[in-house]
Amino acid sequence: MIENGRPVVLRRGTVLTMNDAHEILRDADVLVVGEEIAGVGQNLDVPEGTYEIDASDGIVMPGMIDTHRHMWQTALRGYGADWTLSQYFVFFYLEWGKIFRPQDVAAGNMLSAIESLDAGVTTTVDWSHGLQTVDHADAAVDALESVPGRFVLAYGNIQQGPWEWSTSADFKSFVERRFGSKNDMLGFQMAFDVTGDPAFPEQEAFKVARELDVPVTTHAGVWGATNDDGIRLMHDHGFMGPTNIYVHACTLTDDSYHRIAATGGSASVSTESEQSAGQGYPPTWQLRKHGIPVSLSMDTSVWWSGDLFCAMRTTLGADRSREHLEAHAKQETVTNHHLRAEQVVDWATRGGSKALGMDELIGSLEAGKKADVVLVKNETSPVMFPVLHPYGHVAFQAQRGDVHTVLVNGRVVKHEGKLVGIDLGRARAAIDETVEFAQTTIGDAWEGGMHPEVPERQVRVNPYQYTEWGKVK
Ligand SMILES: [Zn+2]
Image 1 (tube, helix red, strand yellow):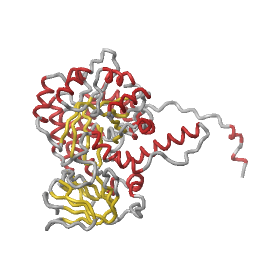
Image 2 (cartoon, helix red, strand yellow; image 1 turned 120 degrees about the horizontal axis):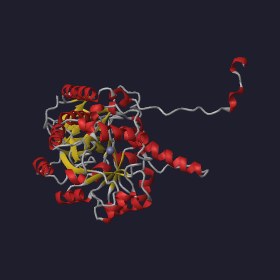
Image 3 (cartoon, helix red, strand yellow; image 1 turned 45 degrees about the vertical axis):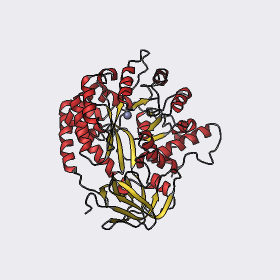
Image 4 (cartoon, protein in one colour; image 1 turned 180 degrees about the horizontal axis):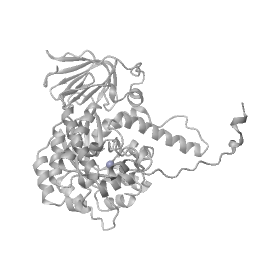
């Protein structure tokens, strides 16, 4: 048993420091004392009573950072597996999003928060756009605070215009009450989209964000939803800056990418989401041409689970896939990939810490930073050896089940493959109640909501079908 507050050392691992030089240390230790990393190196001297974790044959890396997840939707985990973005919008924005009560938002948040820790995601941005009332917001925050991870509440409300909820007295007093003092474990952003309405009503919300001095995160460049107009309006009105996060940023023109790059903002890329839902082609192949910083995100577990191993893997694949496709269209062959495994591991760690303005605190394993540490190690897995290319191993070989130990802010929250001090039973009871409520309320539409119509299939006429197989031996 590792008591809170006891120093911890991870011994003899392959350490991906993710420091500026991207140093990899073999057979090295990471020492955690209190909330911080006290040392990284070989054969570290440690204080008496330090708990030792054998990291040999494992990879020690910084906790991963998800910069955009609608955590409340985890309550309906997997329900939308066959959806497109259109069905998602109809379900949550138009028809059923409003039935979610504060306790339902809390249930989803709690499960999603626990899921993050299990997968080595130590910081998660809760892109919380189901906050119809301040009671919902309090419930969302209570749930996040009940789980020992690092979170950022990105406050949103799809049932109202951002100019409405952000200017309400309720919202302002909530922010003061819950976020009045600085807290490294729970940050704050405002979350809303810019539709491109020439009157730019969203500017009122941007003004509130500026007043409160909080970042704005926005779905930008989403096929059929947001486009260059939103970027142009934000830019022309002076609301684009380095703290802005542009989620997806898929279907934008060079002009918008130039504006994002010039103002120092970053993109949150949700490759799995973009591939399935249809926001646009996962944009890293564009973003890297413009030098736009990237972080990774999972978007929503109504489709897929929330772990960044999947994000790294699919992002590498999508980027390379596009590169090959573009080359083949010109009868060319890609002989050397642009995007490397090392880069996506950076996006999953440093990319996130930079996007959130938390790079001084987290994102790398360096003495003095907060101890958000992940050990990827699984002695019973045939996939965990040999570890020849550590970045490649993290991006293409490892998965959530290989997350052996996780520390957040110096506290061990997962060890030997099991969550520590987490009440999964409580989360399950809350989820059960929400699912039952949703199912009852949605009624007859519940089944159909899960199984959208399949378009008519037409099998092409195949000229090779003249052969009568029965006659050929
Ligand atoms: Zn989203």
